[in-house]
Length: 378
Image 1 (cartoon, rainbow, N blue to C red):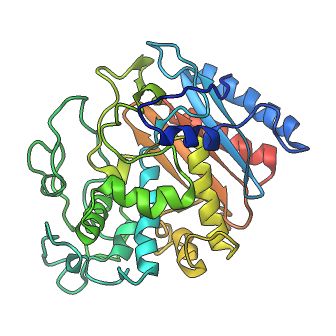
Image 2 (tube, helix red, strand yellow):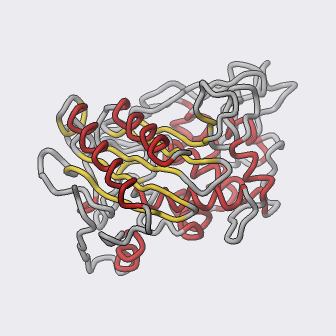
């Protein structure tokens, strides 16, 4: 089991602050926590062994605090460096929920309107209009809830060193983009259809409106306010963070050439730690409950977890478990090439879990997260 190993880099002074924020000292768990933590840690080890997962990072929330966080296994089968609480993973589609918070913070400031035609905010590219949008324009509410009738569900990323498309090239499916164009193919607001392409439109809205690179937009609107100081949307990962990165694995081997790059940053580009994502969860929970330290007004935070259509997402999250009528949990899953992840949290308390792994084994992530619910009684 990895511990919080201190690794200091002189190239980036801000990292010294992040070390203190991300580390969790062994033995610092609150009273009553050791038995719960031991049971779940044992389960993590067993699941990783059963599914061939090289490394994982787990953070557990209890009453709006990180009760414990640990690294497990190794960051790469090629190198063998232990995973610790500072190891960064690709969060994959969990990036969409973090991006949603940025959009909603601008809504709260009156700079964006969830129900406005999204083309009113786009200057460098426009959503092509067609018979589906003439009566019902595409809006940010549609995009964040995946009810915009948009194409392109997910992304495969680009091999390290490959040519990267611009965001307009991505949206128009033009080389070197490796997927089709993002287009409205059904009337917005009429059905749920998961679309990473839609989230890429939201990425362009943010950069067009603020005239800043997307990673800087996210740093200012979300990462710094929430306390995610060891996270970035920069793609590819900056050189000064590379020593902290886990490598993605598929089929029991490290992804050839290194982790893929995702210019679709809003949809899939977040590099982060389990502890940082746990802080993000707490920020949403506190906002939903109207508690001190909220980053959003309560009504907007409520909309993040309230389905816009039956069985659709809210403005950023979906509700779990799908087989329970009340669905008392909210969260988001993630899957990039060589990575799987799940953020799962209670809607009405300060409890939850973040699981990040560097393997293509979704069942492993699911088994860890669902066991946490049993162990902690959510």
